Length: 124
Image (cartoon, rainbow, N blue to C red):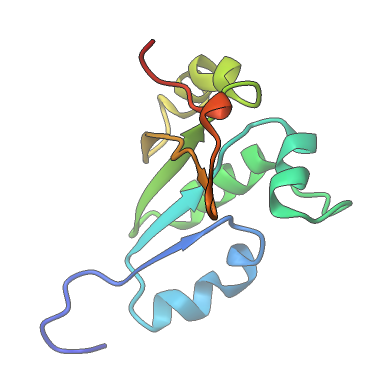
């Protein structure tokens, strides 16, 4: 722990977090941002590029919410047209009674040098 630091945070998709969390907490971690763009297990596997992880995105958040009673937990969800815009209300319902904050983030329509406006879900 470093003097003067109030927050030590990590942003993760949560795949290895349950295994690493005890050591991270010992090192002073007190905030976690979970990148979770879907509640659908097959889409989650696609995003994290790991098939057969037997990892449910919902289960990850629930496990972390239970383990993190002393930590601040935030879920970041990038909303993308044609991928997960139909899940926004599901996220609200799933997380409304959990000790965490959910932040819906607008998709940034850039892929390297190219714009990807067809995925952007914003005002029309």
